[in-house]
Image (cartoon, rainbow, N blue to C red; front, side, top):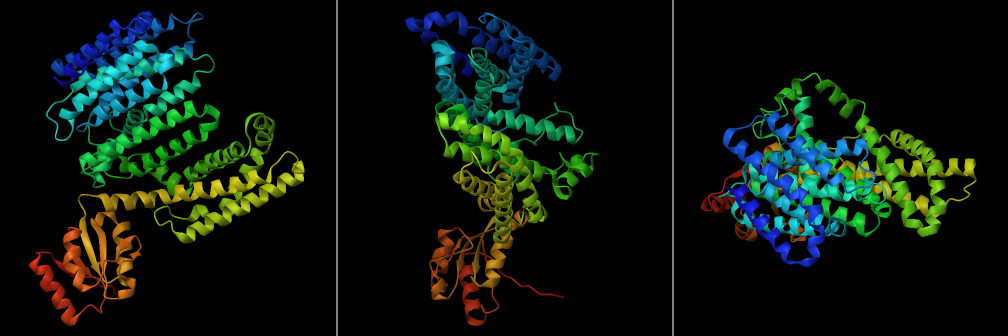
Length: 548
């Protein structure tokens, strides 16, 4: 009955629009969107009661989408191009099913739809008109009230009736700015994609991996983004909050595109796209709960090709660097020039881009960057990045000096470009290790470990715990009797004093076990540690390393 509650609350909010004279002129333009939502709500009710086939729901969403596009397109004097019509119908149907698929964890679809509705009303307020603004704000209010009952542990669920209604409203409302675009419809379309990044990303992620695994796209399973976050060890609430954060970042990026100027803020959108791609690649390597869903992926005919692309040919890294080099070079021009001067210098960017791409890709290859593992990226790899970027920038400057005599080029652009590219390449290569670190430290399944001894063995042990998430061990603190190490941080782990501070530290950090890392921790000191931990009912183990 949660879907019924959402619809009734939204309609109750919309009825207030009738009492505001400024809304009445918009009545005939915004009413098709809630009508489409109500029809999809009816389809969802039938599905909740009669279990409609996936094909029936798909056909229904396409039919409703086609009628909605027809009605909305009538307001355009020249009509809609054929490609725009087809893409719009698919977009509407896709959003209906994307929100439906997203409703796989308590509070997830509700919160994400709330964030999307708020950003759509905020960003497209002038284009949508007062009627659709009231509709979206009413929907946001209904979702906020429903979220109280739908959060973990949920006591009320929206069902397919609610999720299809949400998808129809969000999909229909996001089409209006595209139809009313005075210039290119690409800009409002890209902004809408940013606002709705979570349901689109989750649906695309699931469909691609299911296709590669040879599984039916309509077959349910615990293989969504939220489920894989839970497989990393995050609680369901934490997984949902992470996706809330992604939705807010996507909406904020969309707002920046409109408020700061589309062309000026386009590099920000490119950064978000790269982040989402890296997140998808990382999560694709995470087994979904019991890993049964994607055993087929490893056995499929695609597996050797995917493995070669990722680890032998490094084609994915090269293509990523191609995007990064272009984006950083363009951003450097944007930072250096403004207004008319930018228009005057952009032709030099276009003319020199092939030279920059060739020089920097070759330099990154010669530096040995593509032979480095993302999983173990460290300080030595940063030096490789610096060498590759520096060599590439030098080659690009020399070649442009020979070809163009550097006429029309700015030295500041070359410096900014080198700095931006070094940061971008380093950030992408360090992303997997950072994600592993976050997963290891935030996992609810990991034991909270206190390491006694912050020497070489202790630091090695802490690094290995964080690098091997399957150990399910999270180093939360060191104890060391060396007073010079007290109250410092080593490898991101705090040193909380000596033996006298052991009990207080164990209580403060809710330690699950203690590991003695150094052979020097023995004799009476070891006995005292084991006695204290026995009283606190915490196990003590010793770290040993040997070569046989």
